[in-house]
Image (cartoon, rainbow, N blue to C red; front, top):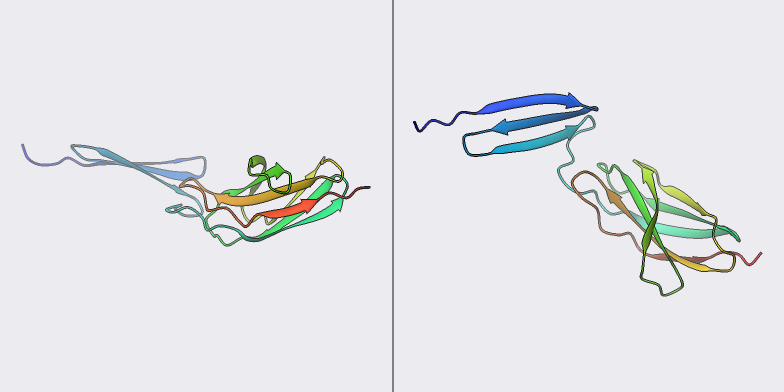
Length: 135
């Protein structure tokens, strides 16, 4: 028999619509959030700035250029030429600032930020450098 049987299943789980379409040879799964499908990675944040507020705090702000992010991940490394960035925080959708506290006085830090969603991650923002105050 040469006919192809097709089955479509749909369900809602945790606010997301899940759909599975099956033919004779394969099944394809698709997901769509309540806010709409995340069919491509989000656009990268830009205009990242870092401002030393005290001997133990640096505040970051950036421009959100995406309409489909799940959130942003903030990465940091220590030193004016460091490249070993590690994630220090994650913030939610449409958040455009972060206060990094508990830092060491008179120490230089570098930061970068990227947006993410279920499909993938954006490119990194520009890298910024700030030095905590001496006292």
